[in-house]
Structure formats: structure tokens, C-alpha cells
Image (cartoon, rainbow, N blue to C red; front, top):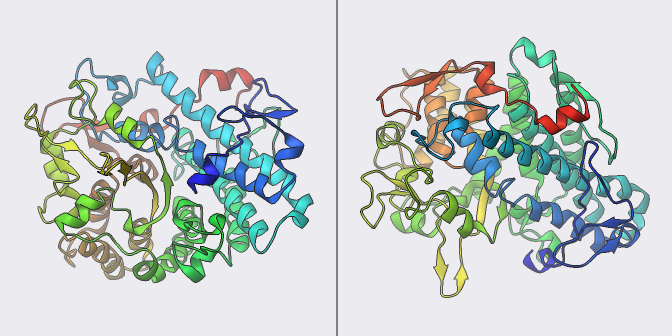
Length: 477
């Protein structure tokens, strides 16, 4: 994939009334291509789609803010004391200028990439003759799934607490085609209708995805059809479908979608091993990832957010008592020293987060992949959506055993155990806040204070991130 990514041409159309260039695509690093050239060949479409994947790894998106930073701070993952860099965000002070800046960057980049995807989708159906083999289906299927994924994350962050009556309120705009005019806002439930339709269409297009026949390595006869874990493949789309159906409280549908991924997980996406050596080689536990992004700048992100060399106010690290309360079994693979450890320079008695620490073999960096979607989530979805408690516990226990922890006791409260597992499974991946929001959790642990057992009362005031001021200027929902 790297060879393709170095030849990327990116559309840089700004949604919502900002200026745009009709004739040319902004491209990186230094070249420009007319729109007619960018979409005049199969390779051009591949380059444009790869450009979206590359852009998703920027710090404003999933290379920082959208998984490691914003939703994790909102979920009280990291201690934010007085004068800490992200304390206002941890206090849900959404009107504070730095917090506004964070949200503006995320909103702009989400919709910029949606615009880039729509350029592909707006052109591809009239040029089917350009494509060989199954590539038309792959490109369109991946593009539709990516557009759904980005819209849904925008909804999860900026939209309502969906299970409440607020789901009938206006939420965010939906762009089903490239438009220089601001698109109208949709009610959250209407938006979900559109997104579910899109993911269903994507799954039809990806029905012969090489990942199904060949596994994550794909069809290695062509670079574009190989390395399917780094693309929005069929099982990534199915995992997203399960997530969305559970969001809508369609437990039967969510369970069926999750079960399809669970059925192939042991063979196609096996869990990372539990030994110290396994985790040292793969601290992000990428084995069960159905979709991951390649980010060559991951060392810079680690140094900016997690390095023990940072000042206390800048490093993202939890209080030790909260961390110990999450990982109650020392055998748990997710608390291994390759992921959580005291700083080697002895600068702190707490533990630092080494999940994204750079690993090198000679001059080559080994861990440049970031987890985006996991098969592990399908076990959690299946546990929550199961028709009875015993079946739910069975799904949850399968995941726990894979992470080298004890099976769930039959007498346990399933919701309590699910919450604990979401807290353990997705550190640094941005999923816990959305779980809390979906469940409308009334209180969560407070990491803006050193007081043990302190909690934050949560409501729509905390859960619903306001739209950026610039978006409100364009039009009101």
C-alpha cells in the first residue's frame, strides 16, 4: 500500500460554504491533477481512495484526535489536573477556545474526507468500463463504507443521546453527493436510515471481497487487492453494521451481523497471543482487528501524547488507582508491561501508556498500524444483544478468556461486566465515550480530581458536543 500512498492525489473540497476549487484537486506532496485526469483511469480512482485512507491518519482524525485524544478525554481516561493541557475538555467546557479548536478541526476533516469520497462515488458509475476484474465493486464498496463510517462517527460525537427522545431532533448534515452548498440537517433517526442503507449497499458490493476467500492478506496478485485489513473490507463493513444496528436498539439485527464476524474470527482474525513476547511485538494487539490504518507518523503522535519524557501537564496517563480498578487481574494481556508500565527513568510512580510506542528493527519501524475496528467489539455486541443472559455471558467469556482473564460468573450482572470490558478493551481507541453515551450512563469515574471514587454526573450537556461555530454560521440545524 505504501507505494500507492506515495502517489496520492487528494481532493481538498471544504464542505459547508468554504471556498473550493472546481478545476483542480489539491494534491500532496507537490503535484496537481485536473479532475478529468484524476478520474480517467482505474489507477486514478485507486489513488483517490488511497488518499482518503492516508488523510484519515492525520492528527485531526484517527491519527490522534478521533481515537486517542478527544473521546478518551471525554470518557475520563486520563488524569487532567489543574493547568493540564486538556482539563477544559475533561470538564466538558465546550465553549472554551481550545476545546472549540479541537472540535472545529475534527468536524472539518470528517466532512472534507466525506467530500473526497463523494467525488469518487459521483463519477464511478459512469465509468465502469475503466475497471478490471472486481475492482469497481471494491472501490465503490469501500468508498460507501468509509462514507458511512465517517458520518456515523460525526453523529456519535456531535449528535444526540440516540436512545432518548432527542433521536428525533435535527443532528448533522448528510452528504450523499459532492456539493458546494451546505446540505440540510437530518433528524438523527432519518440519518441512520440513510446510513444503514449505505452500509447495506456496501456489503452487497463487497460480497466477493478477497478477504473472504484469501483472508486478511487478500489477493496478492495486485497491490490494491492485498492487505485487506488496511482497507474497509467486507468484515469491517459487517462490524460497522453491527455497531450501527445496536446503536438503533435493533438487537436481533446487531446479533446476526456480529455473529457473521465471530464465525470467521478465529481463522481470519485470531487474537494476539498472551505471552510477554507476543505483546512486546504487538502492543496494540492487532490480531483481531478487521480494519486498521497505516500511520508512518505514529512515533510523532506517541511523543506528543504519551511519552514519559513529557511534562506531567501534557502526558496522557490515568490515575493509578483508576487503572488498577479497570485491570483487576494481573494476567490480563491488556495490562502487560509492554502496554502499561512505570516510566523507565523513574520520573513517576504511575504507569505510562506504551500501546503506540515506536518499535524498530534496525532502521525499520514495525508498529505503524492503528486499530480502528476490532472483531472483539462483535463479541461485546453479541453479548449485549443476546436473547438471554447465559448466551450473553458466553460471548463475553470468550473474549475474556482470549485476553487471559477469567470467564464471567453465571451470577454476574451482564451490563456491569460489559461496561468493565469496554473499559479494558479499547484504551486509546476512542470507543468508551460512545458506549457511555449510547447507554446514557448517569455517572462515570472523574479524572479531574485525585479524590478516590469521585464521579462525574453525565447528561446530554456532557454527552452532546456542540457544533462548531463556523458550521452554525453556514446554517442552523
